[in-house]
Length: 291
Image 1 (cartoon, rainbow, N blue to C red):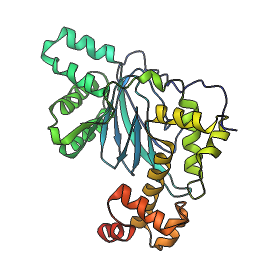
Image 2 (image 1 turned 90 degrees about the horizontal axis):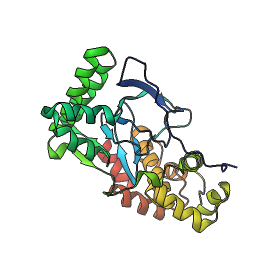
Image 3 (image 1 turned 60 degrees about the horizontal axis):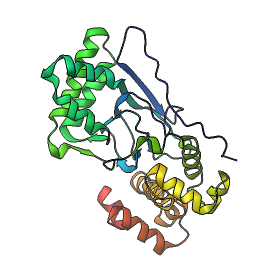
Image 4 (image 1 turned 45 degrees about the horizontal axis):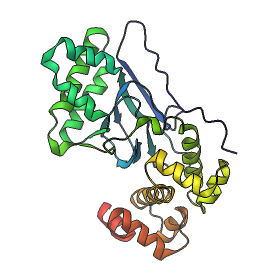
């Protein structure tokens, strides 16, 4: 059974005694890549791969080169589209800093007062693209080679990229007024559900089956999942299946009927309808455009 006592997945970030800015990197899958939250603000680069990012009540596609800024205690996760046995050795690079540090900086130095608005926007998960994302990515990579004073300078420059980004290169994806406390006690179950979906995408993944796995009734599980993950259970399954289909269409020569089966669709008409719903085109059109 996947259920059990809900303890949440609060990440405790331990920094060195002489640093306030933590920098790290990791691959995928990883014990660090899960639905979780922490009090630190996080700036996160996806180095490789594509998939879906979950943040608060939002679920949006991500791609290589995107940079994100997540506010304190905002639950988040990045789910990559992988073949069986595939791994991404260096998918993520990130830095974390407690908001109290930045708020203290704002109080002491009015020259950086613009950061206050940026920190408020980060509570809704900022997604950076275009040239701004490219600049932020370079700075995040550089930060890993810096210590002490130099790391602080890089952080300030990184925050300035977010603050200066033109409106067409950033967006916030979490609904205004989203309550971070809603999901904080649900993370263990959400992670169990996500793992189950990923492992059974080629099969019949029904709401009732998963609800039984975590010892909930169907209606209760449906409400719980929508409230905690921000999307309905059926929407989550559909998006992950279509994302897998896109990857197979783009990276293999499999016939569309085989891809349909590997993504859990027994009916061709249903597969085409769901694929068009997510991408705006048929599987054949998608393959032609991406080839």
